[in-house]
Length: 442
Image 1 (cartoon, one colour):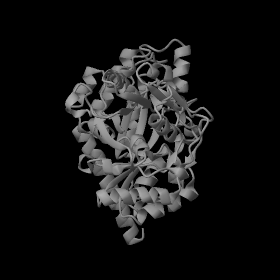
Image 2 (image 1 turned 120 degrees about the vertical axis):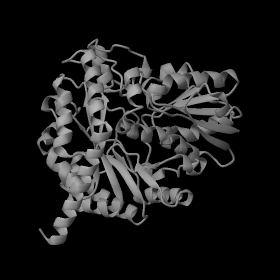
Image 3 (image 1 turned 180 degrees about the vertical axis):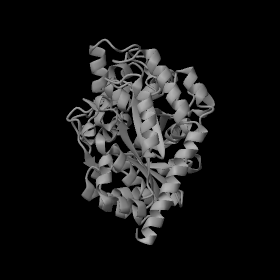
Image 4 (image 1 turned 90 degrees about the vertical axis):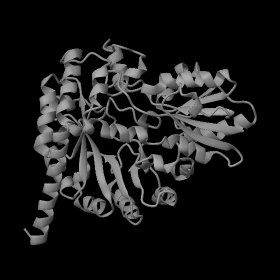
């Protein structure tokens, strides 16, 4: 038996003006290209759980109509896709089934809408794939594949995590590879379509497991750049310091996502800087108190920290760790003034990098359920619009046209070549001044 692990990759907006902008704004496409080039860690992990007696192949599909690049000799196609590409994934799954190949589908979108996915697959996995995969393999071997495996009640223990099959990759095709150190996030933002949909618990992978994965990558790529594929890496500060110290011994450069509370711990920041942390991505979401109100399901944690955002960014970047600040446009209780507010905040704080997206109601999220109940979804089930750059809902305090125009103009301002250069030059100048101050004892 041969299993093809098929990842739908690439990101693209339906808005033609944004797509056209991407050709001319280097800052706008840089992070998008990085995300699009990341391999599917979930599929590589399942491949690592697959017995060695089974042949496996990993393929990333950017264009499902480019048939020569898609393996046709597999007995089973295991397909994973983000929501924006799910229509293409379904067409590919249909093509596989038409030729007699069994199809298993899973991931965030499939977990949110298993009945929809089941129309295109022989079997769907609902929840964390690791909990179901050994049973799926046994059932495939016994020719008794079930139509669905619902494992949402069986939280996967990350201490049992297998070593992902990084060897299936052509590492020369990537600018970074991913390692997961935790799963989940305690903040539970209304719009978040991360691993909390698969597993609501916040859980940690043992540090030795993480280091084993990094070392395996280093066997294939001696000086890699590692992206920690986490929802919020530094929630547990005590564990974080053990993790960072261990990563430091591996002599790699790395990137991760976390929340603004990392700025509260100078010791952790120093350790991160000393161990090769190049950048952290932080979901700031909005510079507006109104925009942050009600964003989280359990508390207004980010709103309570808004007044400390600027100080926190300065503190992090003073350690030589650049911050990629993320903002969501179209949040409830924000209007056309929000675009200028984001632009001014970026200038005032000296953020090295900035990422803007449009509020997106992904299926399965509390946001989707609320907007649907309020009758505010504009293109329900047109999943290709869930790109983070297309408006598929009616905003509360501005028109759709105002949101689309304001977002485009903000992108033109923030991601222009001069603005991008100035942010980076400012970071370098500030870092140099900090080093000089330390050297002279000021």
